[in-house]
Image 1 (cartoon, rainbow, N blue to C red):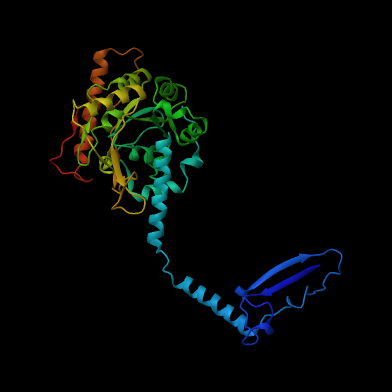
Image 2 (image 1 turned 135 degrees about the vertical axis):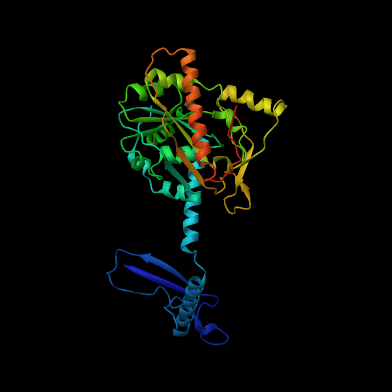
Length: 373
């Protein structure tokens, strides 16, 4: 059975109070539950006369009034609007992506690519994908993604998630994004990366996707790499491409068509401290890049609580990724240097055309030019 022991404070018994019986509130009672198996169930007893059940109507009314006042206070607190709630969800989705990126061919998962969180991620900036030409499922493609920016936000959102509708715009095409091979050394994190379509930027991994995985594969490579990220600044459109020809040779060896892609607004997401060429700090960045594979950029974005504060989250600036016209590439097992140079020049012309045709639509002026170093 169950004994209920109630004691009132500060007076042990109502009759001992100097002003007579004291009205009790629930907060003035201490409860002790004593379970006994030897007594008949249903029998309620009191342990002593001092611990008799003493709950007054006035005390109960006071407790109810306190509860009602607390509920009233809770209901009068302003709740976030739907717009504020949506902005909070978008911010948290970007935060989880940044943490994943900083901690860090592909076994894809349609479930991971279609996570609802990616739509909030897309809407934070926002990000959109623009199709100018069709990609045929009967071919394989190497997509050159430009510019690198700080964290390749546009490339990640468009090629690793379905939030911008890649599969709807290019039916029959399976997109992949090549990233540093070092990101795949952690077993659990490796599976997470590969589930979205990320693969190591190695000849073996890319070669497998272009030759052993059937047709309809599109491997996106951020051509400028870590060296390009060192020159990333808002409003600056400089690409490291003039001597980057390995992706063209690989396209020729596998007969994969070359497709330029440019993400307008990518360089506006962060602010970076750019060190001058020849300075000792720039030298440290380059040495670190050669040793590890990426450059330690000194950059900042917005804070978690306010856009006015500084932190490591990107600023909410619009990004528009435009997929350009494919350059048809023949399959040549051992292409000559002249052949590689020819198709490299054709690719640059296609990229420049894409940039000049769309720059005024997506945040740049007609006077802005694309510098290729």
